[in-house]
Length: 331
Image 1 (spheres, helix red, strand yellow):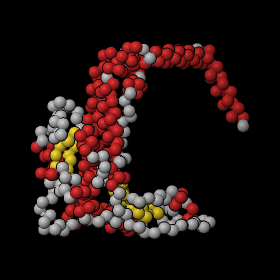
Image 2 (cartoon, helix red, strand yellow):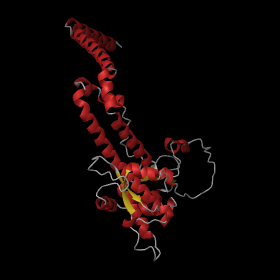
Image 3 (cartoon, one colour):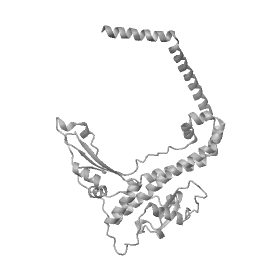
Image 4 (cartoon, one colour):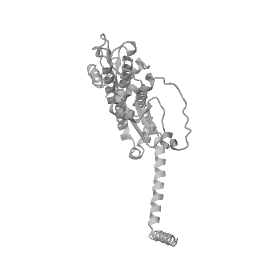
């Protein structure tokens, strides 16, 4: 106890000495100065964003910002393709599970168990095998059938998610061009300390750069006592999704009338169609020469739902606006 009192007295004496030397006083003065400068900058910032100069800049580029926001909205709709395709899921029935244990079964791991259509609660052995043969176990435990309908749906998903990924890059480049065009008219302080607020005040909508929209399937094992847990997660990003479609195609025995006529919507095929069409929309004739940041998508001339095939003579290049106006409904 005496030692604590002595240490406390020494600490107080140390700080009193600092005050005598003016150290704390100097720090306090710096803090006050910083606070004053911060308040003055906030006043200046508010004045600028309400000034006629800023309002004039905003009005002048409003059409460009609107186009960016429309593209952003379209990209978000592409990201939700998986939820709209309504993949068939096996109906396994319904039951209520009640945990009446008093001891080991109430561990945190068990409390955090997640339920969902894309989660398979299984044995540790299945988790391990799913890690070794992900496509095989994905089909087996999530009731994904290797048939034409399934392949067509995953092709739509791949086509739209590829467009979404490409669209994000083009959208950022377009936004950067717009901002760079007006930066000479924006005060240096606003550029330096209020760049994000400048974007918001101009009217740009938030651009989500995450990849959380890629479908994810999970095999999970949690021991009865909750002491051990393992999982194998399969995220169908564009590369894995393309390989999965190829896997499904290899499992499927096509009819003689179809075999050899059908191609898969691969990245190379999409690029080949764009090159064939000179990176120009087949409906409105706008090209990347006219709009360097133009998002081009590959469209089935005869929709898959009406018997159209994924083959070159049934594919065309469309800009995102024409593709959206052609059909807003997912097959």
